Amino acid sequence: MEDEEALAAATATRQTTLSLPLPFYHYERERTHALDALIQESVVEGVAIPWELLSALFAYLVLVLRWNPKNRWALRILKGKKRFRERDTGG
Image 1 (cartoon, rainbow, N blue to C red):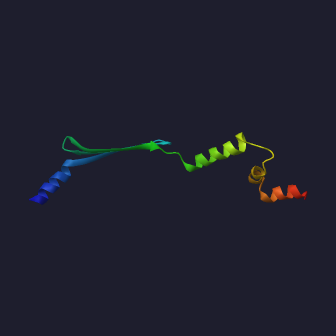
Image 2 (cartoon, helix red, strand yellow):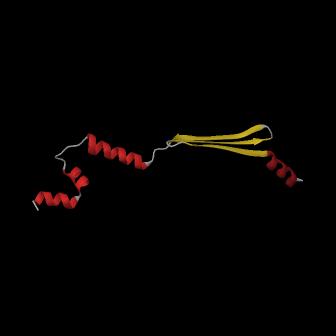
Image 3 (cartoon, one colour):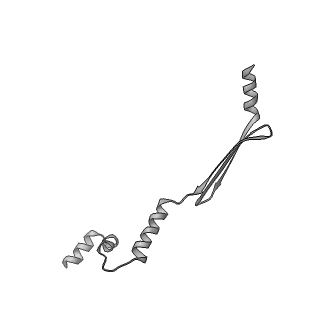
């Protein structure tokens, strides 16, 4: 008898999920209904910024906005270590 009640309860519940595919915003909602009543609702939302975008922004801020021509490490990044050594030694 319990198996029949559990089966009836399982078939009477339904789950709905909503997930929005936005580029920098994550929103997901999951609802569980039993017959016509809402049993459980969970919402997950937040801002999702990829690490590639953050590193590109950091590089832009450091190398473009805060550019100092006398800065040796910035020249090494932009031109490479080997080319920087050749220019310094005159060869």
